[in-house]
Image 1 (cartoon, rainbow, N blue to C red):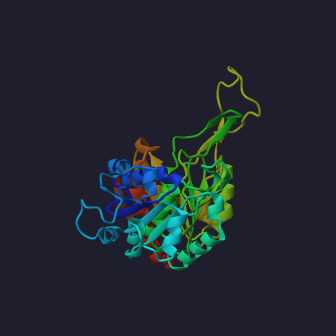
Image 2 (cartoon, rainbow, N blue to C red; image 1 turned 45 degrees about the vertical axis):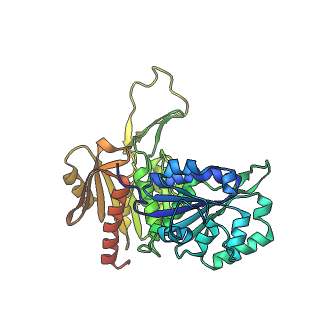
Image 3 (cartoon, one colour; image 1 turned 135 degrees about the vertical axis):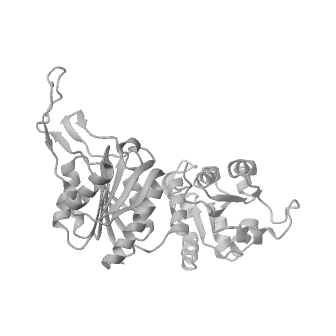
Amino acid sequence: MGKGELENKRILLCVTGSIAAYKSAELARALKKDGASVRVVLSASAEKFITPLIFESLTGELTYTDMFAPRRVGIEHIELSRFADIIVIAPASYNTIGKISSGIADNLVTAVVASSKVPVLIVPAMNSAMYENPVLVDRINYLKQKGYLFVEPDVGELACGESGRGRFPRIELIVETIKDILLGSSEFSGLNFLVSAGRTVEPIDPVRYISNWSSGRMGYTIARLARRMGACVNLISGIADIEPPLGVNTVFVKTVEDMRREVLKFVEASQVVIMSAAISDFRPRYPGSNKFKKGELNSIELEPTPDILRELGRMRKKRVLVGFALESENIIQNAQRKLAEKKIDLIVANTTDTQGSDYLTGFILSRDGVLAEFNKTPKVEVAKTLLVKLYDLLKKFGFC
């Protein structure tokens, strides 16, 4: 199993008095699963909703609740603030936000924040009337001006039965925001990326189709990491098995013709095009307008679909073009041939045995030869390597 993206990162999770406190346990679990070292601080009010033992079981660390706890030595709030690469207050109550913005440090959570020099991410969760109270709005704006970071609460049904903005945000959004803060960079700042991902489907009739096993993980991971490195990313996605990355403009398509139309719509404004989608090579020449009955369809006449990558290679201006090749034999030779024939700059050639999985076996090639080799490597590591090679190429071409 590969390392998580938050490997060696230290996160101090502060939980305050909100009915959403139980959701912070799932956040702690997600951060730990992604490789982070997590310590938890509970306010006195938070302990009314959730116990320290839960967090100790999830993180393998002691949970902190009291600045003056007799079981420990040292100045606790100072030690905790020095431990962290980031402080995450989730959920953050009305009371806690008000105290922090007023410079009050009368409990362990607020004292840790007051003594820290690392980024502080605040995740409010409360009744919508409280969240929209002008006093709190003013305090949040004040903290933003001072450099504090926020994840806005979701809209939906609240614990009180009312509906409005105040729900604890999705765990995935909070984790992705933490990654952006800790791992974000600016290598691709000012560049527009166009990424295709997922699998296309070609209808046989209204209920049957031709497709493949692609999960969309590779393209989604590339889009997510490129955005984190500063790129503005447009993602054209066929069918995929996972949720699209946050912060990316995603357009969903089904057929090759749909994919081609949307790619051509965005390509002119893009400096980088990465075609990782598993596009059907063939489609039925005569798809049925009605469902075929058993015995009516003894064979299917196929025709080739448009080769979008080849078309982009012919029309290209000053942009970097990256392709993918799924091969079952002669991987390097076939990839080199496609590189030349389709006039692309980089190609990821991978074997068929890992398609649809979280891993990839294959190579990254340029016109100069093999740049990297992978053997059942996590796709996130493959994506990172590809973007490093891409950055080198962009510098060579004068984009960075």
